[in-house]
Image 1: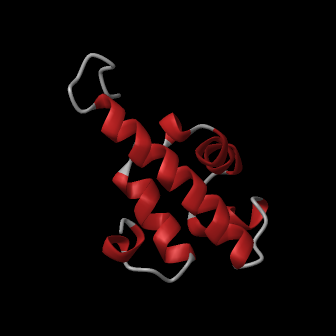
Image 2: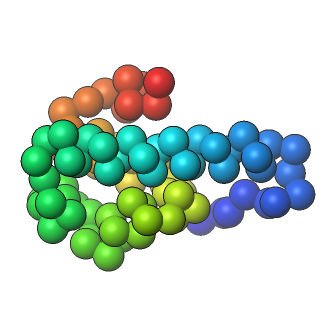
Image 3: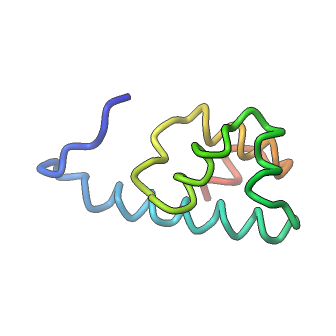
Length: 81
């Protein structure tokens, strides 16, 4: 997966998006009463999920986000708002 280039004009904005998603993922998990281990039921490895909560730069795949939205019964477009 291609990582954003820090020299890109879009890098700062994209970094803010990643941070926002990182916080939202953790908040949703906690609101639903899930543990990080529970997230493995949605085709996410425990380590992969833990990295997404701890390191915003590890959220690189739309496929990852899609599975997370399914865990919380959300549409991906609503999740990205």
